[in-house]
Length: 392
Image 1 (spheres, helix red, strand yellow):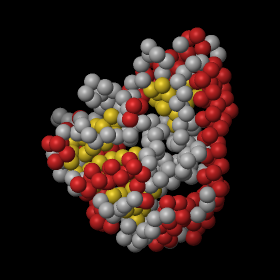
Image 2 (cartoon, one colour):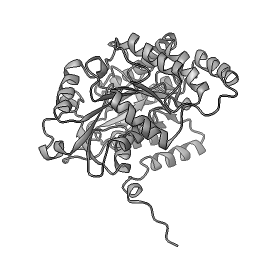
Image 3 (spheres, one colour):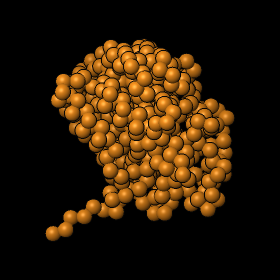
Image 4 (tube, rainbow, N blue to C red):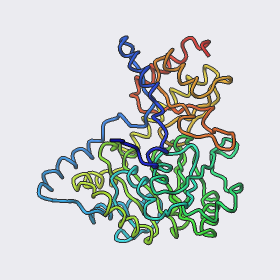
């Protein structure tokens, strides 16, 4: 018999890091310690306050049964309290907030509630892959908006063809941004809101990195408006809870209602003991400040190494990443290959996170360093980078 992938699956590109994995395996077989800045998965232990709350909640909920799709009342109230305290925005936890199994499932599945075949979805390039993959599985048409240095890595709307705008149902934005680390201000959000309200376009704002910043606090688009707007949040980066898979959506009640219907038919609720752990995480800011300080220390170690070998200063204002400009004359892929082959340092080439649009691949001159290795490994990576810098 013939086994054939669906058109949806066939439209998805191949795994971009197969060559990197092969080289990592080769080096490790030689006994060489590889330092991995590739995947943005925090390796710091999940804070004690979260782990202990989770352990207690397992026994407390030993007969809890299936969890609610939308989240427990306590969890949603804790989210509303945190949003009020952090952003000064009052939300109704009953109608304007819903729990999710982390951010990935919500981003991917969100399109199913709003996109019909042929509808366009505007999204940043580079950007989080589930924006595009979720759009494709919903039979929508992704439309990439390049994030360029000359625009401070903010999306621009001026050059979108009018015929595309007429068919657009959704716009993804992501600030603080992965991978460029850019932040947005109120003027930017106002332009986005005015454009989308004028054209009946839903704003999907991915704000999962809002709590990893170094000086200035990022703002939320909900501080300006909530009509036609929904914010995606996660505990993964804020509280080092990537393995727990817990997050939430907040915003326009009408959007939340539709997403809840989608979620009820696609997956399940987050386990109650994990929601209880998330409540403890949201009620504590001390562990978040500790993690911010750790990321800042690692950021400063790496940026000093880049400075010493003459690379352009790309110090991030937020996120767990450095979006580093590569040496002149090298592409992102070439630079990443040399880092792993000659320094045993794994990064993500920017071209693997973006696509060519109008003859431009906005990631081709950058590599992404995820500041997830322990501090001592970052120091060792910095030493390797500075050692024999003539290899550039």
